Each structure stands twice: as C-alpha cells, then as structure tokens.
Length: 474
Ligand SMILES: [Zn+2]
Image 1 (spheres, rainbow, N blue to C red):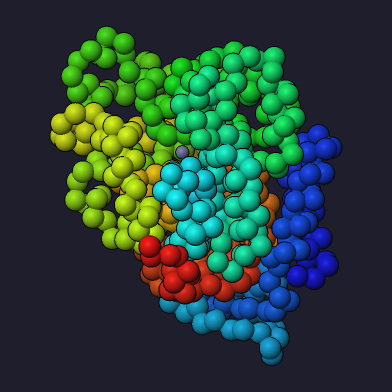
Image 2 (spheres, rainbow, N blue to C red):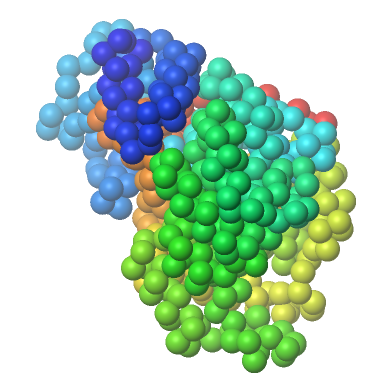
C-alpha cells in the first residue's frame, strides 16, 4: 500500500473513531497503523472486469461493472461506458457472468470459547471463515487476552485469516455463567475501573451477559457510551424493555427479544413458546421501541436451530458443513451439547414450532424497521465457523427478509456496528478490497452465496480450496 492510500484508510478510521476520548482513539490508531503495516497487499493492481456488483448501499445488483484494486484498496469502479486505462502489469480477472459481493462479516463468533474446551486454538479455524467468504468477524465475548492474541495472529496473516474484532469478556453476575470467558461485575461504582482495564485491549464491543442486573447494566451502557464503545447484550435478568430504555445499542440472540414478549399468564402452559401470538400490545410496543431507537438485533438463528433446539435432527447433525471443522472440535460438540442440556424444550414438534416462532419474530422485526445483524455464534456445537453464515443467511430469507436485505445486513450493517462502515461493508472507491466473486446470483437464490470462485481479503486473492487445506483435519 502506498503512503497516500495508507493515509486515506488511516483518515477514514480516525473519523470513525473520533467520538472516542483521546487516549482510546490514540490506542485505536496505534493498533490500526500496526494492522495495516503488517497486512498490506503488495502495491499491485488487480482488475475485475465486467462483473455484476452487489451494491449494499442500495441493495441492488449493478450490471457490467469494472473494479480496480490497488494494493489493499478499491481505487476505481466504472460501468461499461467508462472503463479506465488498465496498467499493462495489472492482474486481470474476467468477471463476465459473475457476481461481486462485499466480503461477508459474521457479527457473533467466539475465537476462544468452546475451542478452548475442545483443545483447538483460534488460529486453526480462522481459514474456514475466509474460505466461506467471511472476511471480518466480531467476537461477541471471549477471554480478552487470548482473543487479542488470536486477533494479532489474524492481522499478521491476512492471506488466510479474516480480520478479527475483539470484545470484552461476558460481563455477568458473580459467579459468571461461563467462568472461562465471564467476568463478575456486581457493583455499578466499579464499572469505570473495569473499563480502565479493558481500554488497553482495544476492544470494539462490550457485552452484557444474562446475570447482569439493571443497575449494573445501566452503568455499563453509560460507561460504554462515554468511551465510544458499542454495547450489546445477551439478556436474562435485565429485561429487554429496561435495557432498550437504558440505551443499549444491540441485543444478541432472538431470545433477547422473544423472552420478553411472553405474557406471564402463558408461561405455565406446555409448549406455549411455539404458540405465541406476536400481535399483542406487549410485543408491538417492544418492537416499536426497537425500531424507533434503531437498536440492532442479531438473531443468531443458526445457533438456535443447530445447538439449542434441533441438534438431534439429521439435517442439522449430518449437515455437510460440519465435516469441514477439525475432528477435535466435531467430536467435542456432542459432549458440550450434553453439558448444556441441549436440545432444550421437550418434544421435537414443540421445538420445531418454537424455532418457527423465532423466525416469525425475526421477520416481524425486519418489517418493522429494526436493524438486523447477521451473526452465527460459531463455533458452538454444529455451528461451523464461516460456513454457518450461509446457513444464517438462508434462515433469514426463510424468515421473510429479501435476499438483498439479508446481504446488506451481513455486510454494511455489520460493518456499522464495528464502526467500520467507512472502510468495510460495501464495494466502494476508497474502501478496503474485501470482495467475493460468485458464479451465481445471490439475489436469485440466497444459497448462491456459497458459489465462491475467489475471495479477495485486504486486496489479497485467496482460493477457498487452498484455505481449507490449512485447517487441521484432526
Ligand atoms: Zn455467543
């Protein structure tokens, strides 16, 4: 990357982070300068000629576009009547009949949790993400020192790893539900002190977990905002109505909405979760509040179908995507399922109905204008890194999102919550060159996101078959 393009990206990032106080902004700048100095593509020019281009800003497929990439940056995009001069030494890729998509982003993963129990290190599964076209991932809660190491490894190896954005540990009651990645926070007065410690790790996201009470949750939200951090929550004790009123930025899992729209009188009826009516004042008022405040909801349908509710059905258990993960992880999944008491929820038909209700509520949120994220909770059992994002997209479309809306959510909206919409999330001049080239149109059938011919990450061309060879089979 040339000095000028590096400065352009650096400026973008400074603008994005300008809301943070000086010390945190300085830390962020130091990190990103280090990131870009370690993973810049060589100063070569690559041209993808005459492809269809998915514009995540408008949600449309633009025909016959030529994309020019220099180093790690997109420097020119033109229609067929304005094709630029192409340097003689440029690498030319014939895009005719192909579809360029911005690199996908998974908004909910763990790069330590579950893997540590299975004796798999985060770096071992990172190539799976890139092979699936997932060029950036957002940790949604991990042991922060180990996660930072994984993120540094990824930044040093952009040719086979996605960009990793880290998160706080799960901020929870005492003792935390997940002792490996949780941190007990019980006194609101001590929250600023906790953030002083977290600040050194350059996290992107703060995560409130299920045992957190409202006074602590409110203090975490206020402190996150004071420091310019995105705060999201997997709710339990703290209700969705309270967390949204207190200004939480995001909710993880459709559960964090669903569990708070159940009328109390129904909770004693067997199978009530599969019979819920969402056209009630209780549900309508929460959905309206989420829409009005633009609170992001990350449904993570893959983890509910594959781990929580339906891990015992063949279409989940024997899904071909599962064969791609190391055997250590695959063989650990049933052990973890048993420990977690999965599947939850009684007879199979009740569980199927409950999952259908999760999808119905997801569709309702979309239609109401609630901004949706696309996350998977990989590598929870039967939620394979990278490839489960395609499953998530398929389930979102089944829930009522048009394919274009699902793709915009998985690219531009996910980039927005990372505060990276100035550099990621769309194929635009000045942005980082994270691009997938598909052989079939994902707007015709969302499962065509799997038809990946090549992945460009940070301007580097990667081939899925080669990336998969880097993942240990054992
Ligand atoms: Zn999670």
